[in-house]
Amino acid sequence: MKLSHSIFSKNNTTEYTDEAILEGIINNSNATFGFIYKSYFPKIKKMVWAFRNTLLQPDDIFQEGLTRATINVRNGKFRGESSFYTYLNSTCRNICLKELSKHRSTELQIDKEEINDDVNYELLGALVNLMNRLDEKCRTIIDLRFNISAQDNSTNPEENSKSTPFEIVAEKTGLSPDNTRQRFKRCIDKLREMVMGNPEINEYYQ
Amino acid sequence: METQDNIDIIVIENYLDGLLSEQEKEQFLLRLETDQELKKLYQFRLKIRDDWEKARQYETTREQVKEAVQREKSRQRRNIMYAVAASLALIIVVSGIFNMINPRDESSEMAATETDSAAVETYEPQISQPKNYADSGQYKPNEVERSLLLTLDIKADSIIFNWQPLPEKETFLVFVSQENKQEILRKQIQPTSLTISLPRNQIPSGKLIWYIEGFMARDSFELANTK
Figure 1: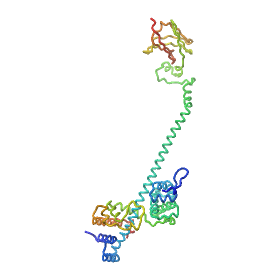
Figure 2 (figure 1 turned 120 degrees about the horizontal axis):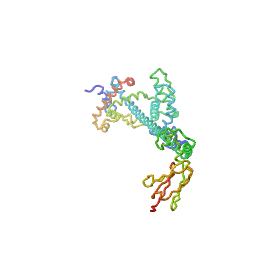
Figure 3 (figure 1 turned 90 degrees about the vertical axis):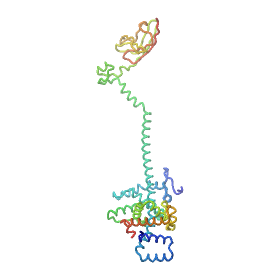
Figure 4 (figure 1 turned 30 degrees about the vertical axis):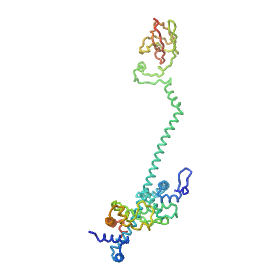
């Protein structure tokens, strides 16, 4: 973190500018996430409590909101048109509204002005659950074939959209190329079976 | 036995890797327009690749955020514990300093209670000594603690024993051997008397302790054997 991006208040605690926050999020800085939690969680908690609904847990809402905001910052979808706090607050508020609409006929009034979010996080959440039901070998082969690194925070669509040749996947897994191809087929087949059998997300893949 | 889906997945993967010949590629693209099952499978393959990537990023980010939040929560809890411990330590130190600065307040209060000569409390006897106090049902705490100044003057043929102040009641001058603590001589003295002279031959030689019964004060002297 560059010093010019942060200012130091009189009581010796570090304050972050929005620029410093975004830089810290991209670099997965513990200090930045610590600052975000310390500074913004109390306000988000108040906002969640204002709904007066026990279905909404402030901790869960905050973590989910910060996760989505982080992804959008890293993918360049947060353009800094509002402050990061305003963006995070709107994200958390929308999560609350969506959560409430699942359980009753609450009309959604999503903050469209603040959120530029075309990602279906409910779908991703369900998909993560399915992924974790696959065995470790399957996940590794699919990751390698899809050219995905779990630690890669930034995504470059042009590079990543290319599939890794099975020969290279085979080298990394220690299997033969034919065996790797067969394993990949079985894994994709199993994944498709699980997706189509899941009423939460199968409609999306029809 | 391989299913048609499995065969199709191989063809799709080969198509994506550019491994199909021109003829195979044409056939595949033609089938893709007419075969709905193949089309669905192909679309699933493309969609799931994108969603897999997004889901992986979502999962990784969620873990990172969760860890960061947990870390900050732990830090805050630790800070609260330190603050509580520091507060307790401060309270102990401050109260200790306060006691050091104001020791006379407490001790004088206690001393006043203990030395109040007007206070004669009714006392249920629980001790056997001194028996006369226990029997009377009264305890006069200052009685045995009264100070007494003892002096002696050794002459050629006698020893003069002096004390201050007056005993105020009939009591005894007592001699005890310093070696075995055994009483060896006892002489009655009058309440108005401040002195008594005893011939040297009445007092046994050796190291002796003398005192007036009913008082705490003790004095000692050594008398050589004159025989």
